[in-house]
Amino acid sequence: MEMRAAYAECLAKLMEADRHVVVLDADLAKASGTRGLYERFPKQMFDCGVAEQNMASLAAGLSSYGFKPWIESFTPFATRRICDQIAISIAYAKRNVKIVGTDPGISAELNGGTHMSMEDIGVLRSIPGVVIFEPADEVQLRAAMPVLNAYDGCVYVRLFRKELPRIFRDDYTFDLFKADVIKEGRDVSIFVSGFLTKDVLGAGELLAAEGIDAEIVNVHTIKPIDRETVTASARKTGAVLTVENHNVIGGLHAAVLEALAAEKIPACAVGVQDRFGEVGMMPYLRQALGLTVENIVTSAKKAIALK
Amino acid sequence: MNYDLREVCKALRCDILQSIGHLGVGHIGGCLSVTELLAVLYFSQMNIDPKDPQMAGRDRFICSKGHAGPAVYAALANRGYFDRSLLLTLNQGGTDLPSHCDMNRTPGIDMTTGSLGQGFSCAVGAALGSRLEEDGATIYTLIGDGESQEGQIWEAAMFAAAKGLDNLIGFTDYNKLQIDGTVRQVNDIEPLALKWKAFGWNVIEVQDGNDVDQVLTAVVMAKANRGSGKPTMVILNTVKGCGVPWVVALGAGNHNCPVPEEKAMAAIRAIRGGNKQWK
Image (cartoon, rainbow over all chains, first blue to last red):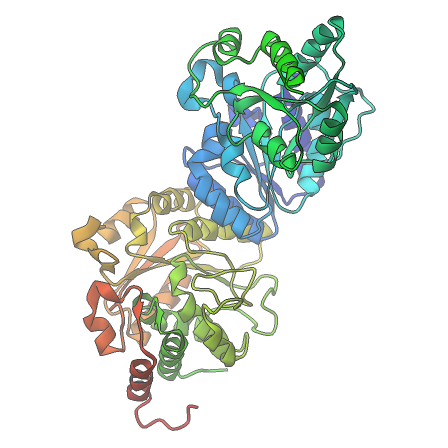
């Protein structure tokens, strides 16, 4: 199932159970997969039109009235476009608002560079009190949705819209503040979030074929980062690689390095090298921006060589 | 309880002067221009209970021009939300009365504001919330004339009208001044009333927004618009710094300016005149 369809199903359940759960769109309900919910929940679904600033502060106002708003748009418009509204109306005012940004990074594909957020995590990570969550597959997303809704505060969800290969088993248990060690290993710790998790697993197999035992950690919550798991893994393997669909500045790489600042452990990064995105399909964009399995393998070896 | 709104206005002006004067600097102009509005709302028209600031179904006031915080604090203190002595802590480190309104610090403040344009959207959200809750509340919100240059104001204006939020009453503190000069010179917002009408709002223009009787009449009229299917904007033609001649004389310079304590105290004495009943 597409991630957005799973997301919409989860929202429907949450709205059914609690009339205070409301969803606000900015003319991208179809893209977010929630257009179909409007008829079923007329008193809980509101389209603000192409006016994201109003949507964000309006959600804060609804929150002040005891509602639990979810706001949604493409990642650049759900983050950098409304950065001050998130900072002041939502975070500073301690409002219970969930922000869903769809099509993160290169997954914006044919919408191109204008719609391709490479900075959203960095922008929001520097705002106090904002939790940042990026699901890696449908299982993780479904497990997370009720937890996110129950969390009293601002959470940014970086949502890949299309179908993703399965990573987690049905018995997966989710802890918002705990990273998931998907595969234990001894030689290098690879930290990853979002859709690239599958690529890291693929890279892990290629590394294993070369006798390299990689530990793979899915850091679904980039802020607050699970320092305990990150540090324990890095200390164990002695080498770090971060893999992200985001600028290496401000994103997962930065978050991991901040957590490891007191450790003397070499680290490499696979991510967007401080540049804007561009139009194209995923295979092209992966190559153009270096988000490939081959690059993950090469970079993991580089990190090990730095030990 | 019936309050003498003229006397309330004097009390609020004095407390604004005292709190800002105690610190020696502050947003004095835009606080003094909205005194009559706050007197009418907090001492006559709003359904509120100072003993229960979070009362369900209460009317709400969201001061989108958050820098008028000291004026709102004066109203809240005089209405009994907290002790008036707290007013002297304005803007001191660790205070519960920061320069701009903060719902997490000050009893009676319904929304955190200060980044212009945002509080107005928050008020629209609260009006939508009130309608969903069917609690019968009226949501009041105050914006500045300079603030009306923010695009977000008009995003929110469009949404409120489109959703027919007739439980929402907005006020524009049209004192014609902003930090860099006159509103007309900097970036004219005229024709203001026509703009709001074009955005689908009821509009009430108050010739003298510092005449408490005119403001009271306008608020009563605005409340009567419930059922019209439209939100209402009350445009208050005000004087920035009203009630203190030397502040008025500063013109655009009175937005955030030094207020020496001795000058504040002299202004307070002038406002009090022969009235000895005040402390």
